[in-house]
Length: 328
Image (cartoon, rainbow, N blue to C red; front, side, top):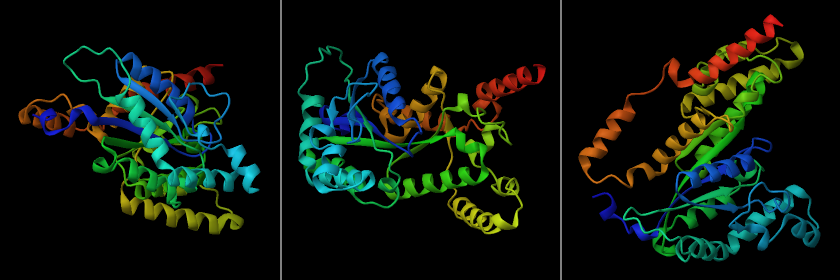
């Protein structure tokens, strides 16, 4: 029933991976690509970062550097790195037909030899630049997403989830973590997509010192006043603390931001991340045949996992590392 209501030959699922520099976007894209291929999905990577022209851990199926590169824009337009990157994304927006044509080619013109009665929906992973303003106020990337998801105009139905990566390193500093929360909230509101926030590199979360609270505090973004209380009481930093409190009030008033922890080397956390992304863009509904089954799934997902088991593996790992450190 669910499949009959769609032109399933033209449905594409995917995720656009965003986040600050150093949050692990490119590594995540490479790993999730391999992970989904092992699951039997027809997965393609689209590199939207014009500065990613060398040393990529994956071979992109579509590469924006074939249209324009950061180095080229900086040289020809006499721009710096930030201005050059924005120019490249604006250039892509102007020449979006180039990207749409290539999406059609790789998703619908390839011969994958799939003889199963069960359709294999193409899956796109968009690797994005690390320039934060592209996600929080610049309109070019948002316009690109809007036009890519225009089903009638493009002839395909692209269903995207925004996946925002935040380095768990920020959990070691209250001020930086609140800034990361504000950036995540602004990204959610600006891109207007189904959205999943990921706290990446949780295996390295205590590399720069022990965190003040349990991992679930940072993932569920609980009462931020406790985080503000951890900030240093210094007359020199008084205005910074007041600003952080005001930002925290804004974040809590929306009540939208939460994170799922990810260790790129732990398949269990990869599975949890993909389940959330699939729920967000509707991929997990594509094989459902009856309304009764849909209702059953929704009822089961409403029984929230907010308990110790949700973060049990990561919490126990952190506790064990503390015990080892104390014994030494």
